[in-house]
Image (tube, helix red, strand yellow):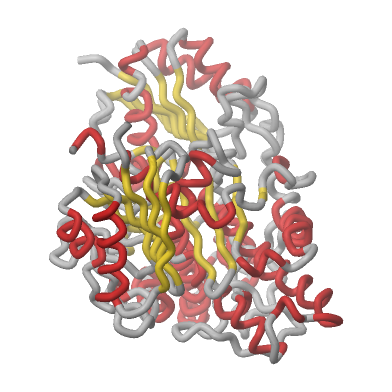
Length: 292
Length: 292
């Protein structure tokens, strides 16, 4: 069996895995995200012990994904200290001496869920994650969505909840959906993490549903996916997924008869827990097989 | 040369054309949209005089585009009188005895502009039209975007302009972008058509730019097209396209360096005037060639 490598590079940890690209993992290591040199050296060392035929990477960004660009494969203007301008694809590809496929962390997760998880068998699916930030990736006609750059779904502007006086935490826009509904924005309002909201939890869930349903509705109107997978740490809030479903029915149901009833099969939790991204990255590597 | 048929079915007129599917038109007829029977009979009569090997249709909707559905090819819940439940694809396919490809009017226009027009040569493009309604179609990886249903970009909720007291004209949502920025919504506020705005024109252009830039920004964040083609009768307002570009730079530029400068090559007018849809429909028909 040909073995491939998958890397999910996140802001706090980098997950490395080895597998066939068909949903299995035969070896795995988690490396804390530190400075680029020591972090990526750790990745190269792991795969030196576990040789692979090709590497797939799902990385935080923004990324330069234009193959014609001189900075293809680099992280571009990230606020993450030290990582701006890092040639993730080049460093790992040269370090391992294998072909590399690069995409965003959220596209890799969307691909993983569409191949092996909660959107298995569907050709058009969107994966949204609500945690430290808010992001979204998409699979269209069976392939991760690419365009001029890559999606930046967390920057969608949404209408403000009438009771919400928080200015918003996005360094670029203030009150885009990431600025209003990410984990840090909840903690900034509460003065403590959202999971310790206590008596504030019902109001918090209602406000989150108001914001996240606008994102799900926009995704539906603009991309028409067959299913939306909604994950991330903030979705651990009890009742939040059901509240987002109900609010999304309110928004979509009148215009689109297909969304007039419950959305239990349309808006779903991830199936792969924290493996969505790395399984998608492994599949991206396996897709390189014809070129190896 | 094999000849194909293209039909662009709109709310006021149906355009029929014959061509090779490569951007040419050798015969053309415009039929006013009346009741379904007389209108579609007119289409069948035109193609009886101009035999074609297959037919592509870009139609107003909503449409059932699910090949597995018993009502595939039907217009579903349109507010247009008499047209709800019309089996557009079936009536024309049986009437002509040829294979039929069906998509939305806006997807056909997006496909036409991506193949032959303002987005020629690009694999990822979005076409937005602002007229009687607001709609958007997309080409992703070279193919018209399809999913659970089809895109309904005009229903995107946008933030309201602070000076705008109009409730919005969408029968489903009131103040979605179609309800706030379509031609009829402008006329409803003015008491006369937008093209006769006179001294109200500058404020109207500024407000339209505020709304339409939110749509362009959402499209960019969620779909990352290589280019956005913005057309429709309302874009005839002098200065509107430039104003939408400027407002879009304000919104996108901070988060996405690729959009920090002018958007003259990103946000453009259609190249094919009123032929975008019918040329896209002809290309959809020609795509059926392997199955004929």
